[in-house]
Image (cartoon, rainbow, N blue to C red):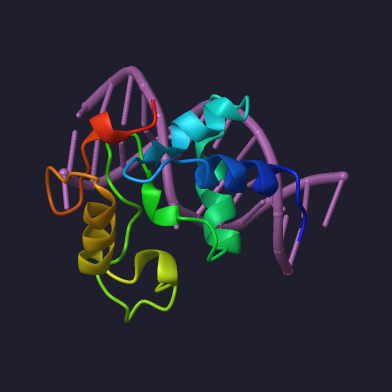
Length: 111
DNA sequence: AAAGTGACGCATT
DNA sequence: TAATGCGCCACTT
């Protein structure tokens, strides 16, 4: 259980204001790693701290992380993505607008 | 230590 | 919401 990177990632994600989302790439950029997008998402899946609103983190297209469509997939099925429905509802509750069932308005990104 | 892995990003097909 | 391949960086075994 290292720290460093994860800590930084969590901090950035935790700083995302309510009603906004951030992309892995942007977070990575903030950490000084323009190509570290993967690592950002990785920390989240590896650590999935319930204090970190992973659901506010989307990919560069504004799409949410792959939910694998159902809780049957033990791979993730975490509180972060309890299900596309759940996640969408959650983000909408915070003021994030969806352009599709899986896409949020990138205009709502922190950048 | 080396290889494998991965919730991405971008170019190409 | 194409799919595939390559690159990047950190973590695990």
